[in-house]
Image 1: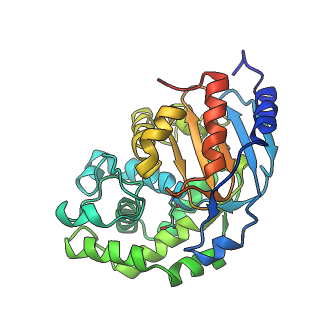
Image 2: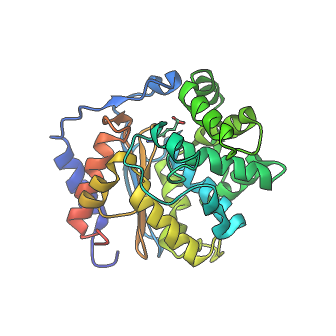
Image 3: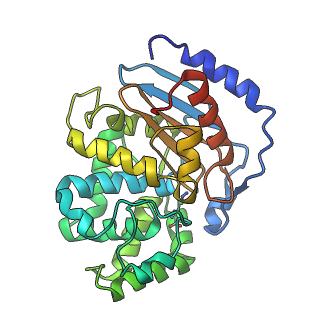
Length: 306
Ligand code: DON
């Protein structure tokens, strides 16, 4: 990050984004999420050498939703190693995040761990490994972000009450034998992880290990193996944005992950991690302004890994 003044790049982008016509809509299929103010906008960039720059609502916590799938994946992969891939694939799906269609003819093995079906399998794996998977996942995340993570009970209950599609996904996989635990228990754990709340500042810090070969820069703790960090980045790059993953690779060129709370995290290996939050989503369920912001950041700083 040394040669570029990221704070002035940020200021320049904010100025230019004033012209951006945001046609997105706040997620409403989880009713509690629809209550968030649509105009919120925050950014936080953390460099692997400790540099920081930020703007807007970067300290406000929001529902991280599908971004949590990466934490759960990292924890499962750390404990299971390559055997994890007998339960879930590493191929992009090209379908929406909650799609059912591939599961039937692919015998209940989800394409990847970042679509809902794959994340549910990862939750099932963690339940089989740990006595208290919620505590283990929270502790893992808290270690990465260096502080306590918030859990939003209202969002959790709201999603649980409207869980029709996730219930369909998990029951189909259970019928194929790819869910080992009770479906209600797995759904409960999945909604728990999706209801975690973090700010852009916290998210950016928590993802820094993926920019730093699996190590937390501040403490030098090797949280996951370097090879696992590399592989998770590859999965984020190819699958992190569902049926828009190609477009994100094309326009931004960084591994990343979105959530329907409007957050996006992206990682520039060896250099920085950036979190952006803007609640209005495009048709693919990804933050519309967040995507535009990252496209501009990548272009102005030459950040694409390609
Ligand atoms: O399961 C769901 O539908 C939500 N808890 C998470 C979906 C999500 O964040 C998709 N990402 N953009």
